[in-house]
Image 1: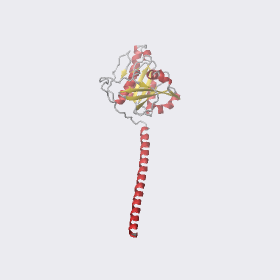
Image 2: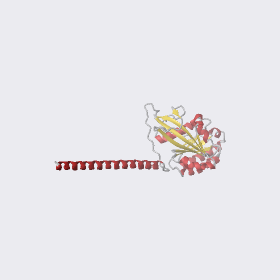
Image 3: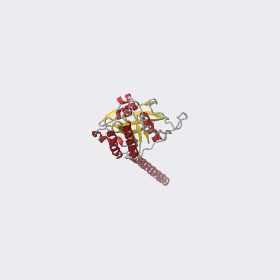
Image 4: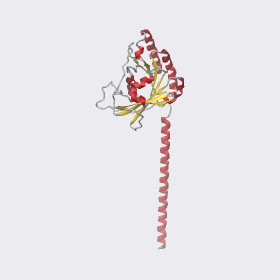
Length: 278
């Protein structure tokens, strides 16, 4: 009897030891899993914050009622949209920077696109203002987050944070001022220090005033602007915030480029008309 009891006690001891080893191993694996998830999260954040890393976006699915081939889904103010600083998981946020000298119409350009209501909700920081435009395109919610950098020297400190992680950079100048056009190269070189992958777009503003200039001066500015756009490997648009010329089209172009939407802009090099060159 005593031997049977000692044998049973020995088996119980072995069983207890086995259970303890299993629990210790499970606890160790759980801790390893936690640390692995933590370091994976940190690594993902490092990759996201890397300067110059190209952004990847999924192709937007097309619905049966989507526009015909060659037309881009409307991204204008008539779309079902909401404004504000959304953080929903289904929202694709695209950062877009605007650079250029003072008094060239950058803010008017942005306000024409986002609307007066969003202007009142804009965020103002030293040397930069932020405005949002949220749209629904092919069932996906897209938010354009626009960083309007001031054009004075005190605003240069904001260029790194404004350009970092931007998917597109709008280099803007006044069509009636060749000085502001010449300044574009400086803005471009500064922006490329912090972002080498963003889509470059050269935009001439105040087209409604530009058409009043003598034709020979118009042609000189057109030729110079086209040369700059080629150096930047970017697309050239002439625009007018006053008459809403090419304002919405520029953002349609950005969305089409990012999401491979079936839309192609038409080249226009006719003097006296809003130029589009690529």
